Length: 278
Length: 287
Image (tube, rainbow over all chains, first blue to last red; front, top):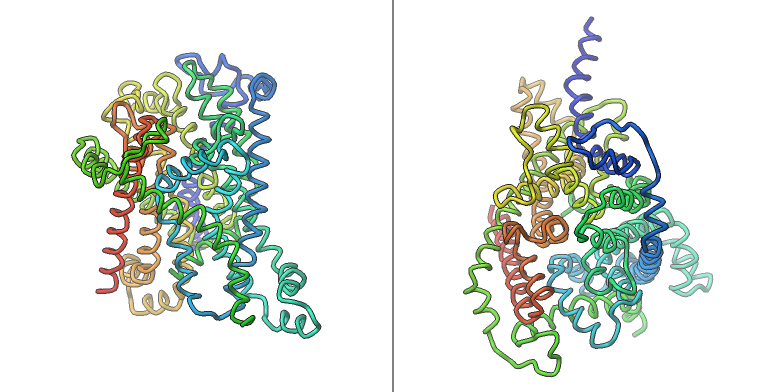
């Protein structure tokens, strides 16, 4: 009897409210995906038909065949991959320095890296646009890769530093006694052990670049057009084609969401560790 | 000599690129804000002193944008916080599918702003939006509302979207804070006869204080700076009903072509934020 009451309390006091919260988090996203596989007729009849009657992939096929969205997917992939490569190339050595050396200005510098995130994007993007225009860098992969690769640095360095700190320094020292240089100690000893952390940070960098809009809009957009900019251009057209838009939204959000769910435990742990420690 | 230089060699690439992409633009923004810079006239950029700032501050649109920014930051952060705190308290209880729920609740946060804008624009649509249809059928609305096209409802529509985007951040951060509070504190309180509300007030809230302040501060800065969601959903409109300060700066430069003025507005925004942060940290040190 008592046990049953406990079970009911768990159901009504905890599980149902949590289910409502999860529904709130997921339903808008699921609604978009559902809308992307319903025929135009069902989407645009008023009063609208709530329950889907037929499902179709026509919007997805149209999107990839008739528009330049496929090219945008490719551009986004190139930019995001480049941003991960550049970001890791910069963040790994920096995090290694923070974790292995006690030097003057270390604490100060670590804090400064976080302060960077306080500058409004507008403040950076207007001058960057003018500078890149002067040097003919606008609308190139390079412009977006260097932009995206940099703004993820503070969090990445911070996260990687804590991973590296979990790997005993004695290992580096043993390698160096055996004749390895610092760089070899990092690449051959520390990095293989830190792979899970490095992968999580890489995924974070990828998602951040894949999702980014303002840099992609201002520093590129014509020759190099990422998916977020392409989607926004669809909205701007006078006759909004909701089916195509929803298909685009679905195709863009799926990779990011799966990658995120894959890495979430590590990322969320690292992230909240930061907020808790201040 | 080598020992001293080694960490700096490892740091050099990151420092160099950061200087190039962050510090240089910040200095350049300061320079721009003191000059009359119009994009299509690259040769002629006369020094105009504080004229851009004076012009910005005497423009009624600036004050309107500032007011919208205040509404935007305060409402968005309090909505996100309330939802997120509720979520954290619920997720802190023991039940079978807790880790799944915790992973799923974070999904909105991993989506691009453009798609979040798209989803909510679609759901709030006057004719085809599911929220209007459900609202009318359930009797919550007497008729469909063109949420994003009306002066007095556009801000509410955009706020709904940002609340959805940001509440997972608070849920997850506060949950981590809750889990850091030792169980013994609650057990001791229970033995002393403290009820649920007393336990909440005397153990949970003080135990979370640090996390709450930090997460509020981080989120506030982020929301105050963010403009992509509004840009996508309303472009600041209808009229200037949803135009916040960063959006005003962006549109002045981007659509208006006036980069000097836009930079001045961005500098003002940065100074305002810096002021709020310093004030908060200073007050925190006092208490």
